[in-house]
Each structure stands twice: as C-alpha cells, then as structure tokens.
Length: 118
Image (cartoon, rainbow, N blue to C red; front, top):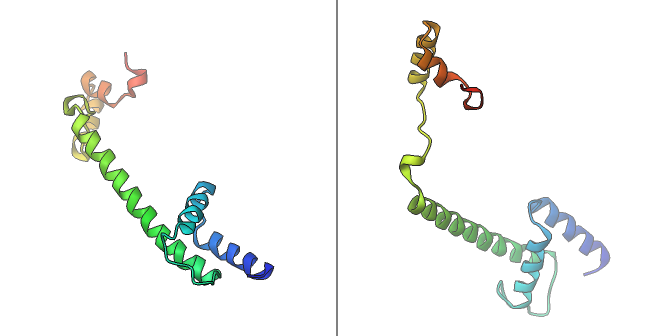
C-alpha cells in the first residue's frame, strides 16, 4: 500500500467505525496478526482490512451483547424487588393531581420532589 492508499483506508475506517477507540484498533490489529479474521496470502490492502474490520465488528457486537445479558442476569439475581422504587401510572398521577388540588396533604406530599419533602 502506498501513502495515498493508507490515508484513504484510514479515512474510510474512521467514517465507517467512528465509535472505535484506540483500544479497539489495538485489539483488532493484534487479532489480525494472529490470523483470527483470515489468512494473509501476500496481500494486505484497504478491502482486506475493511473485511477484517467487519468480522471484528461482528465479534465486538456479540461480546457486548453477552456482557449486557450477563449483567442483566446478575442484576435480576441480586435485585431486592421490594427495595426497588415503585412507579406511577399516568392515571395515578392525574388522580394525585386532582386530590392535591382539593388539598389532600398526602397527595401533595407524593407530588413533591423527595428532596423538598418535610
């Protein structure tokens, strides 16, 4: 690859994968040297690198998905459902507002930001 092809490939990579960090590129090239994406048959050019990056991106997405699933499962296992904050439906909110308009102190307290409650 000459200097123009290298610059063109770098621009293409940064346009296609703007969310990659320096660590992503370090891991990608380390894996490429190990032959994880395909064998090199005396040819490395922009299209080969982009093909490898597509494979890396698929592996990266799959790993992120696995990490997310494991994190969710750990949260579910460790979550104390009674200590979780109870949500309010829109209908309950409207009902609270109506009660607060009529002077219901409990409803007013519920609608008040917890940081400002008495």
